[in-house]
Image (cartoon, rainbow, N blue to C red; front, side, top):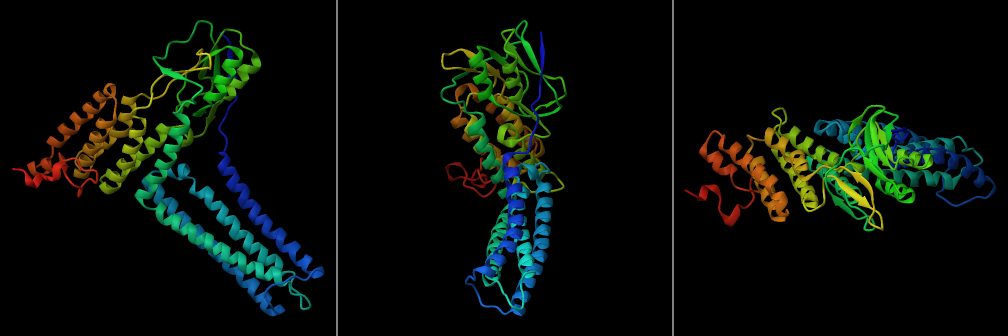
Length: 431
């Protein structure tokens, strides 16, 4: 058995780099425009608002000072939002990426302030760059619009419902991209077999979290070189250097192809929801569990999280799960990879919510509604796992301290409390 080290490592997501680059471009562009435009106006006078030198200097100075002060207020507001999000779950800050998007706003504000300062330095008694001063006012208006839009987003972000909706939106996108096989790559499910005799083993060069396995790249290499690849690690798992990642057969594939296979496994510092749908489900559960803790005692937020958990489970209840084999155009097996199966995902979604919400009426009623919805949608071979949780819910409800509470808890309610009961009845209507 030969060993090939994987050199793939985590990188900053492309969207983050684009936000940072745009922020730097806005700040630098403001300085450059503030230098070039007044010089151009000296030789080619352009239109704009009429200012005398003193008024132009006062206007530009006020703009620069005001924008700098406003930037400090915006930074304070974003800091408060980050703290609020961390109270829901510390991992949400990195997942939602709001701070990275806020860098663009900071770049725009910095660019406006720098532009005003640079233009201010070029105002003379015999020359007022009218268009440059006018543009400074336009930039203030645009920056104000960006701030108002950002504040609207901040308002949505600090609510529990807004957070879980943002996570669910990214999770649905991840489901579409990561757990949906392309049409030309049919897959089937089965048990993950042991390593083939004499297989080449590709191991990790770096420790960290398996952020992504590029299945398309693996299948492309395996098809081109007539290989079969078995993925040994699950996305989201922590690994140490030297951990086996892939088994490749036949025994002597080309070295260049092995390097390409190694690069298809990305190892980084943290789990990424875009390539790890189970992590998105984990985050929704974290929000629900924290809301159900005695320190927070916010079951309505837990119900909002369960709304999104139900939506996700409905998406995957009919989807092929567990270990699967991806085949090429000719039907040859090219990649065997493991995913969570239905009982594992159901445990992830419901077990801890049941544990920490066992004494909460809203949680009981919302979970009953969730199980009813999934029961109607799931195929027969997955109904047993739902029945197991229905029995657990019944036993937990029976431990409530009063018969009235038990009767209330046994009514399915998609709103937790306050929604219509089945057949228009409520527990109070029955004897």
